Image (tube, rainbow, N blue to C red; front, side, top):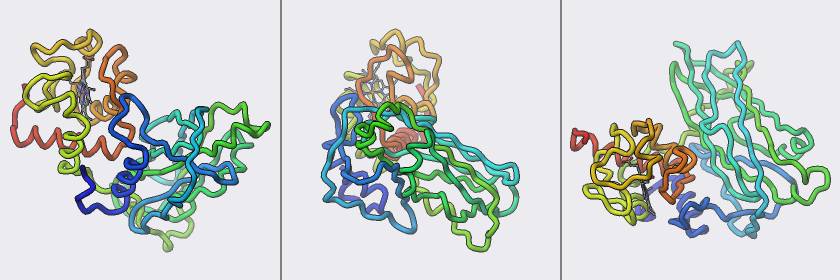
Length: 304
Ligand code: HEC
């Protein structure tokens, strides 16, 4: 597995989580079992990148609640800032205490460097009181070069004690909304790109494929799942002689980075009625695997 390769912060951290949780792969099961005993209800984001990530107390005693909550992400950009800013996932459904990674994407649409400043707010407001400790791309002046696009991971969990506070126990959904404004103090800006994770690595993807996918897939022949060598660019459900579920066989989907990402995140959610019993909630892992599948494409140059 990828442990041997020299990775910096983010990936190493996921490996740690992976080890903790015994990832790979209770089928169809979300991978994190880490949780925390903290005193405030807080949504805690940590950032990765140049600053390194604040080592999370490894000694935190894990307690993850079976109670689930939906966290919805809302992103806005003030009209004075020509940026695009969006949450990669509109919402996630998580266990209280479950360490969860989400991504935001920002792009400067202008021809000059621009500095933005994000604020966030949490609803319902009674939850918001507990969100003070967020540290991420909020609060700092962030610069994007002309047309630069970055993707920023945000790591959070919702404190399980939310469930036992009479004021908040009925809360089923939290909305976290961020708004980027043009900065008033652009000279203090840092590069927003520092949050960006590593580029996807086909080599890491290959190792993951061997660990996670190869139980069911080979590249050149059908196994439990269909052969995958030329999957990028291929219509879903189109390998001859593979007994697809009717749902996948009739899906109107062509596999590319975006559709593969959705599929791997939640196959049965993406194509209802399909039967692949695995989810890969870690987006960086998905990116690596997709980079690997794409690299096969390039080296073979063909599609089926
Ligand atoms: C436990 C078995 C299993 C594992 C593990 C598994 N798959 Fe699958 N996969 C399947 C099955 C079964 C199907 C066909 C599903 C259907 O017909 O609805 C499938 C279908 C697919 C498809 C659609 C292919 C097509 O021709 O439309 C892709 C892409 C895919 N898997 C990628 C992966 C990747 C990448 C991994 C590793 C991260 C993985 N799978 C892990 C069982 C598995």
